[in-house]
Image 1 (cartoon, one colour):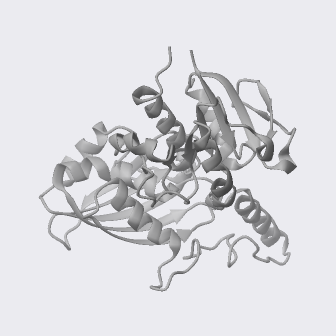
Image 2 (cartoon, helix red, strand yellow):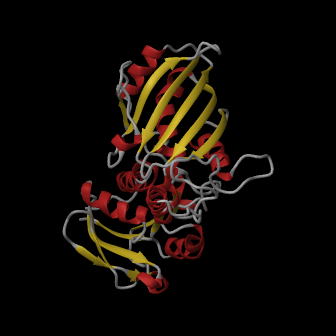
Length: 341
């Protein structure tokens, strides 16, 4: 016996990926609904590679009564309106937007890191999915923190344009083509030219000079991993279609060697260690696209601090950073709370 699952925002990048991953992982479903905005009503969308086509239903008229789980991938605006309605109807909401992440009554969950936190979902019938850049980082940090207790994290991200949605991917493609043929390049989605460039600005600026994306990495890491960990982030948009990369510097309370860290990461869930100190002995975003794992490379000791490490991690932001983590939360929810059959 399976679940009745609704994917809200099914026509977007993350929504499509959610449908694909539900099918790939053979999530136990008796029924699945593709739900989207009124303009997508009736649009057909494939359930992964199954060949089964789903007709999109209008969110404005969709009744969540009798549905078990709703995966929301539609942004904070629609989520604010419809997630409480779904939750009130008895459907557990797993939300990919930033709306509920810092709500003390909503668990923020990465199953490899803080699975027990999911037990708090009953307060609002909502579970939050973290920011894409946070998700891959905390998966990487968890085994190291358990072994030697992280004091401080300094991270610089190299985030792909798919993090800004389809418009971001289209802009990179269109600008690249325009540059090759000598046409004028005008930024629309991004604040500056993204093709053949990098932009040290994601989301809005805050009063302290950091951006909201950087703030999210700080507060979400504290909520998921440990409130005592100090985090400083610089988030950069780069001309890559899919896959976020991060350069992470860590300071620990206790001694840990690069070799020990490699061994811990090699055995950790959700991580693939690819760390050869030779040409090509590391993973890049092009290689991680379409994969479930968070790849870790270039683990080395930092001689400038006591008990320091530096490493590189890469992950498909549409998968582990969004859709995969949401489906993993649904799997965890099923095992712990919504058992069927």
